Image 1 (cartoon, one colour):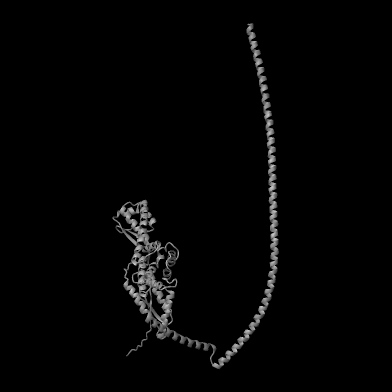
Image 2: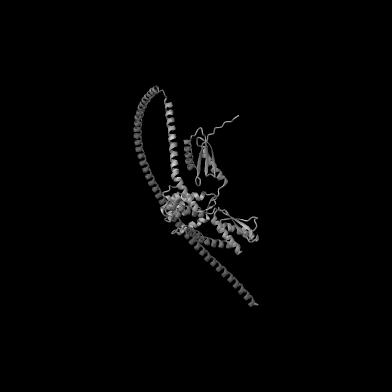
Length: 517
């Protein structure tokens, strides 16, 4: 019993001692933690003070640098202002000097002006005296002659005009008769002989080509789904594809015969092949373009072989071949050039000129038309540049430059080429012309004649190849009729453009009529 009480007592003492030790340990631990925290707070306070001092020092340093930069900029601005002020002062001084010079000049000019005004007054007085003397002399002459000044002038001018008109008319008539006797007959013989020796078919080029289809189903295949095939064909070839109700036919429309021909061959190849889709269309088109280049060279070489022309650059041969796909008013340009070359060669042989050179000039006279769609300028200027580039002789270059009258012909061959060009273009059926242009040309021709004094009526005949002029017989005599024909000819040449020649016939007719009753 006593042991149990002792044990309990010891346990209580152990608990009390343990609790006391725990309290003491916790208090010591709390004290250590507080010391650590205080130490950490002191270190943090020291770091914060250091950072604050560093920030203040950095801010002071930046302020110092900014102050130095601002001071430097202010100094530069002040120096610029001083320089500007110096320049302004210098300009002001120069302006003052100029002002002084201008004032001196103005004073000198005023002095000169006063002198000139005084001299002008003196001259006017002298002129008035001279006019008074002239008037007195005229009055004396009018009293002596019995004619006034105006009446005498009219009489003299009338006599001179009548005399000169008669002399001019007689001279023109004599010269024309003499020229006709010697030159007209010979020229006619040359031209007619050349035309008789050369004969060519008359054919006009059209602006559309018809492609035959094997069946109606092919139209749908050419159009394609949602029209993609026809759009590809038109975009690649540059030709309008017209598909209408015409059975088993498609129309290709374009003013460029070369594009139309390429499109025709492309379309026929696609129809034979049967495969019509955008990729195949582009492949066939590229292949046809390469083949067409070879065909163009064949056309050029064939034309040279036909005319017997040798030694021409490949560039010019290709351009000659391209003329096959160029038209002018429906006339094939290559056929026209061959025709001009043949006529020029025939006429050159008649007058004793170089036939081969005349043919060469005739073939190349319209060479600029082969590329006038691609280059700026007229086909004449383009042709001259091409001939110079390929080192053609001066005669050929001048023939190209002068065949439309843009430059003066410097050789007989140039004149022959111009004549041959007019013959080829003006023969019936060679070229197409619209009714509107045709009527306007005839109307302009008649108006030129009707504007001449003494003309009663004028009629354009034979498609504008002849102009028949009826004059007033009371106002126009036989000699003056020749002068009117000459005046109309010159006015037509100056104001109108026309192919070939125009024959002008002046008719003067008097009729005596009585009625018996």
